[in-house]
Image 1 (spheres, rainbow, N blue to C red):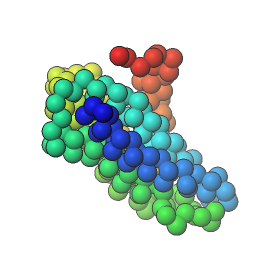
Image 2 (cartoon, rainbow, N blue to C red):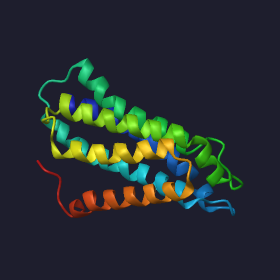
Image 3 (cartoon, helix red, strand yellow):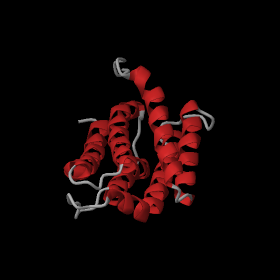
Length: 185
């Protein structure tokens, strides 16, 4: 077993816990009369984010030497993802949950964790993969960080609707062209 394979097991496990937590609450997002499309889209985007991180984690196979520091840094991203799912999807979700009220009650925590995740992913890209400071993925990080910053400070439902739509459009434009591309060797 290579170091990459060994490390990918830990990354996969933590991401699996994140996806399982979100998926366990999905039925409650659609049951009852208190759904909130903005919250549902953020949950969907989080799931897509976890899947794409796992897919692109293959790029880390080029790392020649893993240290405890690089391992912990890489593992911190899935850990942050898990924290975001705990905030997005409460353990006591039910068909009676008022998802709009819930979203606005926890929105600052959601966007704080999302913002931390973007910064952490940028740091990992630079420090572990050795990407240059001004690499294109880091420009995208600035876009997402600005969305999360506005979300953190705004309590306006219209702004939150616009933010989630902008985020969906950004994700589709970034990952859409890659749907039929094979993973790079």
